[in-house]
Image (cartoon, rainbow, N blue to C red; front, side, top):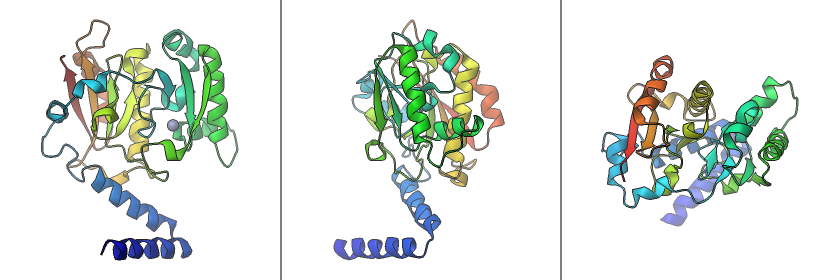
Length: 268
Ligand SMILES: [Zn+2]
């Protein structure tokens, strides 16, 4: 039965590829990924991110990072510290904000921020991975840490073809990794490390555009099944408190389509 199913799937994928309908393959992948990330209810009946968070064992692990290496905000490049394209849009302040706080820099395959950077700078190349690598190397130089290479698609926590983010985490605590405890996949914006709040909000907007765009779940996000923008914090003295995060997000969230604000407060 299982073999038959796998065979049928293989034949279908073969047919789709041979008929040149790559979009059909992507559509199928998108439908499977939507279901895998919780379908129309990524909070699994619990209603809020706080309740979902409180229901998870070892939830404190989300607030303790395995490494302090800078990588993209992409939901596939889990763990560590994040800036869009490893900081290629934040060159003027990255030194003062991040020097001494990260131990290395990664780029990654298929980076949407590197693609956008190439477009906005008139760099005309077929594949922009090299642009992302070069920028990450220069950023590593600014931060006086090693460039640690390009994370390949196989090393990322999402399919190569599409984004599967159901949330954008706007993080006021020093450390946070939603993937460590199986929260819905999402972009991570490290607000606590970014001194320029307007830039942090621009990253939220970029992440929303990617998640709701043609490479993400697109129009599957609606008023009933929104993309969640989740303010996250703990009660440590250096953290940006939840109230301030929510206040910063208010105007932006009113402008964006099919999003809903939510919060996670860690009290340990
Ligand atoms: Zn990226």
